[in-house]
Length: 373
Image (cartoon, rainbow, N blue to C red; front, side, top):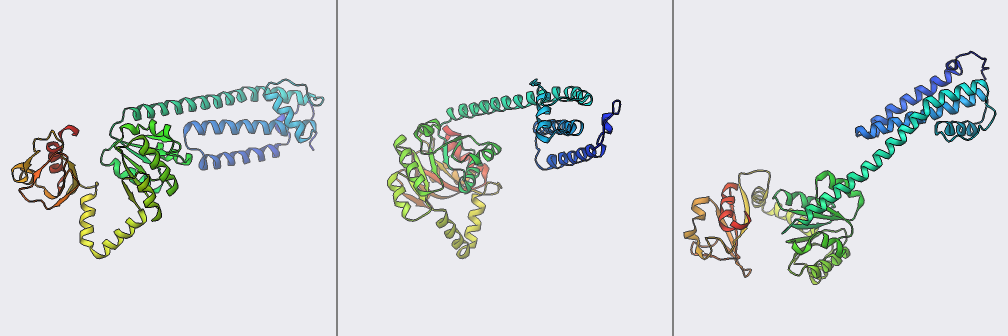
């Protein structure tokens, strides 16, 4: 151990030891900054906290070197010094120890208070930001009408949301997994966090004014309870449910689902069609894709206020003016008329299925459904 004599600079005491600590600390900060720190605020706070720990380490090492104390006593003395607690010294402090204590007070007290204030500021700002962000989401959800509620933001729910968002629909997601919340925030989703089968949460999602609910939870049991609750709250709501097993389809139907789909069955059927009818599936991929504007397939409901209600196709001008191909018309009673003749009469409540360029489809939509355009 080095002996300290009055007048000897403190920086010369255990010079190699301090250099080793400083180099190790420098390398650790570089590693931490590269690996963990992302935002500017987090980076600033992390560096400040690490510097504070460095001061604590220097103070502990200094008392151990100058006074010959053990680790705990030296750490205790350092903490009560830079935190301004003011307890008495654990041992009698020498002249060198007093000088070192004064330097530690000047270097550590102000810095420790600064770090504490920064931590409190970030905590308060983070809570305020979370509260205000949640309130904005709730206000947007309150104003929705004829929107779609997607329950579950897993693999299926997320893909479904992204596809529906491309069509400009109003969407609300209900997700119970807290680990998914960062993905919802990153995707800019209107969402509610909690159990989708909870009546209060569905009411908060404005199920009374929603057009459709999709039950895409992880298990069939959860989807059955969700469908039961949703049907009780909104008897006229369109409910589409996901089923993982065939024996769950009947239960979901009995619970009130209008349509039950199995992703596995749909995937297998799609693969079979691509093998048997590759040209047809390629055409459907082209017509149903949103990324291009060359050709699209669209279904457009006929509003009672449309000027084409009770008008024959030959007199409607749809095929001539909009350059569209009418594939089918689903009548208001549910009947499907494929390749309708030119004498087919367009009725209120019908749904026209057409293929053509996007511009022509939008023009026809303005005529058939003027109130929603």
